[in-house]
Length: 118
Length: 149
Image (tube, rainbow over the protein chains, first blue to last red):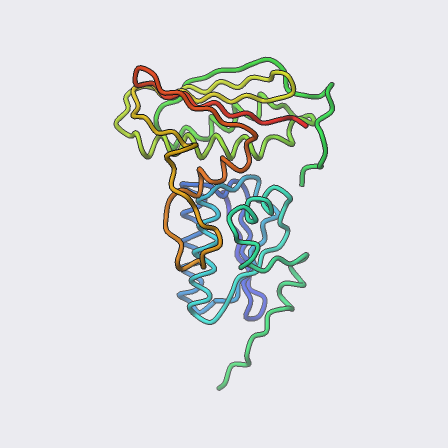
């Protein structure tokens, strides 16, 4: 699995490509979200357009990202969720707790981020 | 995104394939490739995601929880009467019937209250249409059925 990260203001877009499953994919995703949150990047858009397969470990990586960002005052939003991945998220109860947006632009603009004080 | 709806009968996977894999997570790519080859690039590919997911979860569980097993894990894929039938055979394994022995998962629990384990088997049970388990002479055989329509 490959993973691209880009920053749009205070929001960070994380775009994995390939199989988000146990092993390399899960590890890369967890390391990336942990690093971003450690750097204070807690408003994450996760673009699943390039994800061809996700398993329970991939679901766990989204749970970890949700918990880490929430504990630090942020949240994650998902975009480009395929029918199969939506079903997976639904079967694991995540559609009730993770926001899903139609586009990256919508997800970025819908974050309500407080202004940073000097 | 895959298209919804039944798989056209003239474009369904046919026949059967079998292979044995070392008890190693690194074998997963070969397992995925086997499923892709069997389903083909036609309309049968709508089954790719659920079948790869189910096989990945089952194979991973066997590697993690029967690490001491010395035999290879055998996978058979077969198309029969409108179903894809997936059989996973693990010689020299303790009894573990996923239909009755797997821990229950409460997906209504808040994320920070969820306990680890069981999510993969929960998914397999939800996405497959029928599951059968046999354990004889220390050989576990799990048979998963996925309808093509």
